[in-house]
Length: 265
Image 1 (cartoon, rainbow, N blue to C red):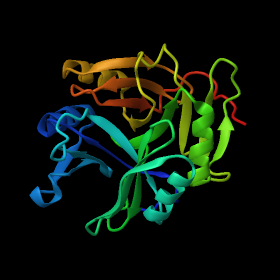
Image 2: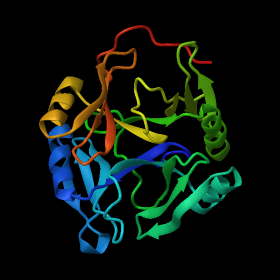
Image 3: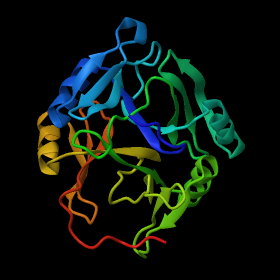
């Protein structure tokens, strides 16, 4: 694994009221296998695809059993305390941490001014995703918000992103990158045809799959639901799903593309 630059997505995890059921579901959808960290680690469990560690799953912390299941994205930082300070300086807030997680690294949980929650990860022995874009691994992330101007200010101020907007009058979409590098994640203005009423702003996590329709069928068969899609696009065939415990995630087959790639400037 390679230590990723500051601001790059580096890890994703989710807390589930029923951890065993979550493991069974995601094993079916992604083919993941699992390694339970044991009682000392609060049964934090690493999920692995064929290419290596892909994500984390955990039971609720004591006193938080009623919290909804949801995926969280972590951004790499060489100094979690310093980045947490930048979050506060630019109108966000730190919810948890920074705190050391044994020899694995240092984490913090933060929110932007609109309440969009995300994690910070300063790697120690755990550097994050073993691979990106391989089947069953993290592929993309998207900040979904009703205040795109807020997100396009806050996150670049904290992480130094360059903002490039899609040249399309029908939707407000941007990608964020470090300098002239490849885009690291997207930012979308939430619309009613994609996001049900009442959906809070959030960071959506997307995993790569070999067959989008099969992932949709498996999700529905296992008691999950489809929020959007499946739909072809220039980026791949994708769908946004909810697992049986309500955690939302997106799947995409990047090898099945339809249409011309839009321009960004």
